[in-house]
Length: 125
Image (cartoon, rainbow, N blue to C red):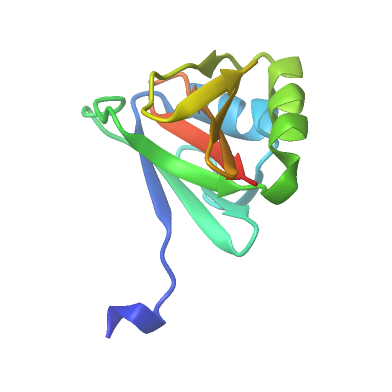
């Protein structure tokens, strides 16, 4: 039954004002819903990203949101770096790192954190 329904990524933050600055200003996401003081919902391609306040923000040690950017991984990484984003480097079996991009088989991935420590990824081939 759930397989025919859309999903929405959900990210917890402690400070909605700082989160809006990062998601809108740094990442360039467009607000789809949520006025001042309300949890923002961003449209990202055909998906949505809900950002809400929680005391448990930043406690997830795994990737929260992944963007499939196709062949543009390096270009997106450089664009984000130009906006002040710092990338994470992980020691993954079978992966090599070129700059901030992990090469994993035929795929590429780069990870960064939002101000709360939530992990995000851009991936592609």
